[in-house]
Structures are given as structure tokens and as C-alpha cells.
Image (cartoon, rainbow, N blue to C red; front, side):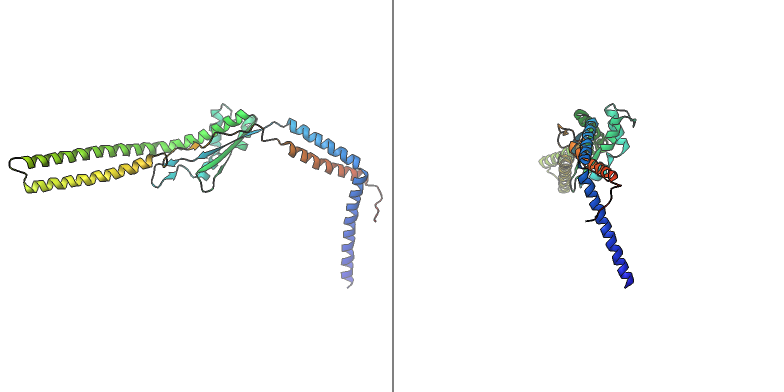
Length: 291
């Protein structure tokens, strides 16, 4: 019983101490409200000055559609998640920097900003990727994002080009085989017709062989026709296409950062905090009273 009473007594003392401390803080704030207000005003003014001194950054955004390879079933040149990750890789960033005439030196603020803000987000269950980057001017933001996108498109074109050539070669081979099959069929039909029209008449066995050969050519032509249709369908823009920008690169008229509201909010919080600490410091020797 004595221990329980002692614990309850200690708990009450702790709660009273907390209430006294909070009361003391509130009392200091009420007595030193002018100081607190002055601290808030100074902090907000300093935050406004910091906002003006911080370089403005414009953010450019664009949407990419990842291309498809000429294979069946159709396949993306690169998974969207993998394509998005490319923008975080130094190799693509270096290609973009060199293409716009920027050095690779990390001491250049423009280079650091590009590496820091170049981001891509893959779309869910789509073949689209959203890309963005920031720069110190509206025009630079657009230029840098375009350079990064072109670096990715160049990498994708390098993979797509040989497959397109292979598809074109297959279509050309098919056309040649089709022409040869049609010519052979025409020749066989002409021979059969000439044999039938001869004074002695066409013999039965050679005629049957010729008809069988013509039938085989018909089957070959039908197979080549179906193959050509499949190849042409695969070559259409619906099934095979390069990686492209879906819409024009967008850069708002106003800079994306710094935001004045954020600076002012930080200034307000810091000013209130500093003012409260100063008020408590000035009242540190003031006798505490409990009401």
C-alpha cells in the first residue's frame, strides 16, 4: 500500500510539474508578446530574402511511349520500368549533357541540377513513361529534357533498327518467292495446255503429274500469301513503332521552385520558436507561481 501511494504521489508531482512548465511558457509568451512578434517578423523577412536569393528553377515534363519490336507476339523495346531507370544512369545523363554542350564537371550547378532532378516514372499497365527535369531557365529545362529523351530514343532505335531490317528482308524474300511460284505455276499451266492441244493429245500420266505440280504451287502461293499478310501486319505502325514523345514537352510559365509560401511558413515557425525560447530565457529567474 505504501509503494502504491508513493507511485501515485510521484505521478501527480510529474503532472503538476508539466502543467507548471506549460503555464510558465504561456506566461512568458503573454508577457513577451512584443518580442515574440518581433522575432516572427524578422524571421519572415529573412525567409522572404532567402526566397529572393534562391535561384528559380523551371520544371519540364513529357510523356514517352515505349516502342514495340517487330516480333510476334509484339513486345516492347524495353520494359517501362527499365526504361525509366535508364534516366538515373550516368551514361544517359552524360550523353544528354554532351549533346547540349554542358561539361560533365560536377562543380557546374546546371550539371548538378540535371543529375539531381532528371526523373522518370513508368505508367501502370501501360507503355508510357513520364519524364521530368529542372533547370535554371524555361528554355534550358525544355532543352535538357529533350536531350535526355533523345538519348533514350537513340538507344532504343539501335535495338529496333536491325529487327526492322530483318523484317524488311523477310518481306522482300517473300515477294521474290511469290513471284517465282507464280511464274512456275504459269509455266506448268502453259505446258499442260500445249500438251492438251497437240495433235496426239496429252498423255494421261504426264497430265496428272502436271496437275499435281500446279496444285502444289497453289498451296505454296497460298502459304506465301498468308506469310506476307502476317509480315505486313507486323510492320504496320500499330504493331511496330519506335519510342516517341507522346506530346510536346511542357514547361510552365512560372518556376516550380522556390515557393514563397513554403519559405514564409518556415520563417513563421522558426520565428515563433526563437521568440518563445528568448522569452523563456529572459524569464528564467522569474519566480514560478502555481494557480
